[in-house]
Amino acid sequence: MKLRWWMVGLAVCLLMAGVLSLFASPLPDGLERVAEDHGFAGKAEELFSSPLPDYSLPGPGGALSTSLAGVLGVVLVLLLTLLWARVLRKKK
Image (cartoon, rainbow, N blue to C red; front, side, top):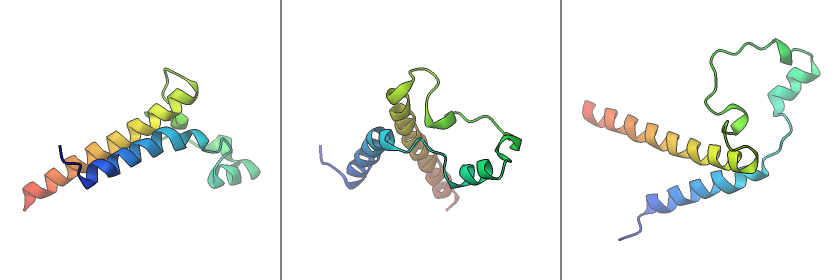
């Protein structure tokens, strides 16, 4: 089987999502920090429930949960992109 450029790219993305996500900072991002500093963080209203809250899966917990959430995110974005490409291709 010939190794194609997109296979290498997908492997790199999956590796980054699965491994490098473990080294992400647990501290709040800039927007959350400003909201906490100015006292309005608790006033935010949720528009819809996130399928991957706090970048983790509800089941496994810990590092495995974070890695699996990253890999699942990459796969979902890939599938949505392929679906969108198929829709655009049919329009032409």
